[in-house]
Image 1 (cartoon, helix red, strand yellow):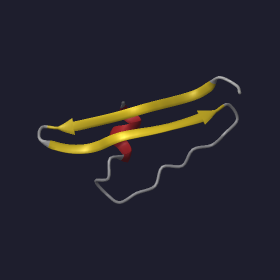
Image 2: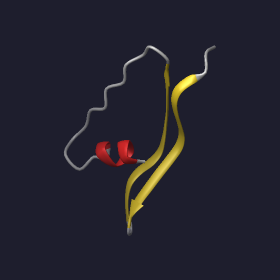
Image 3: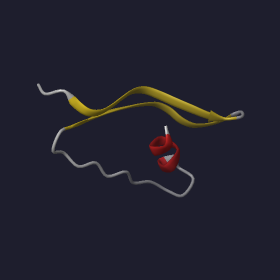
Image 4: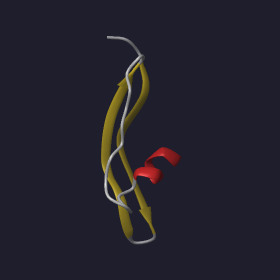
Length: 50
């Protein structure tokens, strides 16, 4: 298996007492595309900023 271009393992994030990401895990290999879909306020931008 090739080295991943992006790898997140058990990523969690809180804004104060509000948990916006909980145990997010994924791998993107070279030459793969990733789409992030979800509702407004679902943590998509927060994930990308991390």
